[in-house]
Length: 116
Length: 115
Image (cartoon, rainbow over all chains, first blue to last red; front, side, top):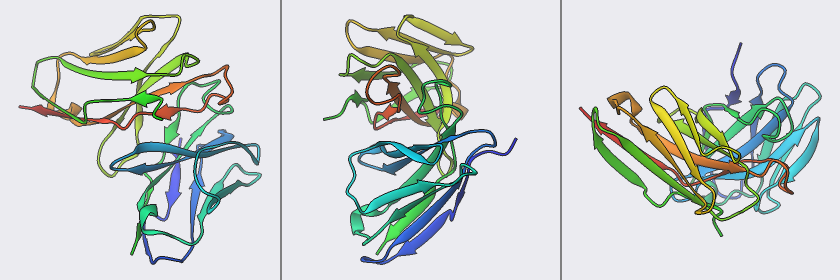
């Protein structure tokens, strides 16, 4: 069974640009969550999608957005990039909404974004 | 305000000895707790979990203890092996609460097991 796939793995952008990251969940998983990992803050929850609807959102500015498609694949977008957006962006999938049913998330390897 | 706290950024232990990683939480609605392990350049992987109705859960060399009154949990690794060297994240979920079961993570503890 294929795991969670994230693309691209690495990317470099400059301030003011925008970026789109993609996530393909494990087959059969309908919930996709996004997390930002930085050295000082650990893993911070961005948002969760279930059945193409955003079910929950973390404490991030509106520059961070996402969506989910009918095949459960998800994208997140960051507009007007700032230096502080440099981080590892992790996508995780699970069968049920949130961690309610399965109790655990399956993570991808992440997309490492560097903003210059 | 951090709801899940891992106050030790790093921990170093000798191979064969016990590793104890600690985690504190503030939200009394949390009823499910998990530990994840993360190697460099990889995503976190699930290690072990515990429900709030239990105070201990064991899986091989890994045991998680939960003290609800103290809002504290710990992960014990016995015996520690060099391959256990990784960053360990504590996570908590309020499955029946308003957060709809999303996982809240601590900042992680980097464990180094020396041969």
